[in-house]
Length: 341
Ligand SMILES: [Zn+2]
Image (cartoon, rainbow, N blue to C red; front, side, top):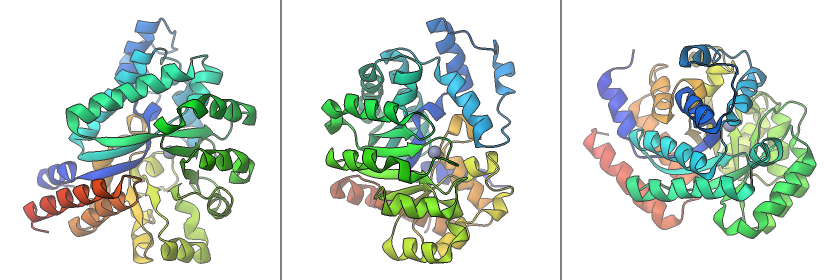
């Protein structure tokens, strides 16, 4: 059991969130509200019925619900509301800077919305969040790896005129059978846009996908990267080169990537010198926002000192300007003093 003092201390600890899918913050209640607002028929009519759908066997069973609920997002206002709901919770979780994934291929190519509707709504929400809570950050356009490659190219065409408003490119969704090698051209194009590059790799897929994300896609961070534990040479390389991993403990547990939090490789990664960060991935689906992910590590014996170091990693691994990083490290130092660390 984690005591209330520790829980509150971790919720107030200044941190960055670097692995967060905005669509994964769609809480069941907001999904039902949006479904009603937009006249979208869902198979579940009340909150209890919907909540009963949240027991997942694997990544695919989660994605099935995820994509079903995404259909409730229709208007610029919906995306603004979604972003603000997340930033309100992020603020209560000590998040000071957030680099947030969005999946425009699904909204545009599958659900028929305009690219600018999605982007304008999300940016509007971020602008309000910045003013209201002081949370800085940016959007990372995520390529949905199991969708048609033409749809990825179309999204990049639509994003090009607005490239200055987007921070980077990512790669997400069902991993196995959709290796990084397929997306070399899209990532090369994103680099020409001046975007940062990150990619999900080694969540359910093999360590080889992590190597390919680094070598072929020039990923600056690896999202998840759990299966790096199967490749000692790659683990040493990632540690030596300071490549950050954006780990998501509650997501890994919920999707049964690990079967018990005590089996999570984060402590081993830290021992090996890997720059791990802690994040919430799809918190509406996985039972907790980012502070709960830190708390989960207390329950396996991780010290507050290590957790504060992980928050420090999240600042260093972010794409925030140096001046902002300095500011955030100062906030973290103040927090440490207050908590006797
Ligand atoms: Zn993810």
